[in-house]
Image (spheres, rainbow, N blue to C red):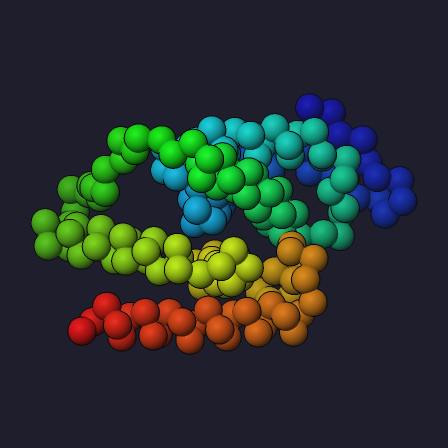
Length: 176
């Protein structure tokens, strides 16, 4: 793909292929953690990158690629969750974690922790889940999240604080 330099800032925009290679895993994980049913995550990721391809000219050179991509993934996840509520599908998902390097106990513990995290994420409203996923699971900074969500910085901090408090309470309740 031939790049045309951005004459305003002298920076060449990223290619679609480069964005896809660098961030596909991030988009896939984000969709899953934002509540897209496992059986639909691959389709949702494909849909997200169709939107990315169409909206490439909208990506500002000074913007965070991850924040921009998360905004797209957020809207796609919302659409898939809304569709799933209207038409529940039969899930063929398995909760297996495979690795030849881990013992059966380790494999079971990892799978159990993943299921516990998924259960917790379903207890949060969309706003808090988004912030929790981006900070705690994706390692994004609060300013990046604020930009991605188009939300006030203090609002992001507040949502994160509440989500963390609920996580601690959830773990305490589960540990009984």
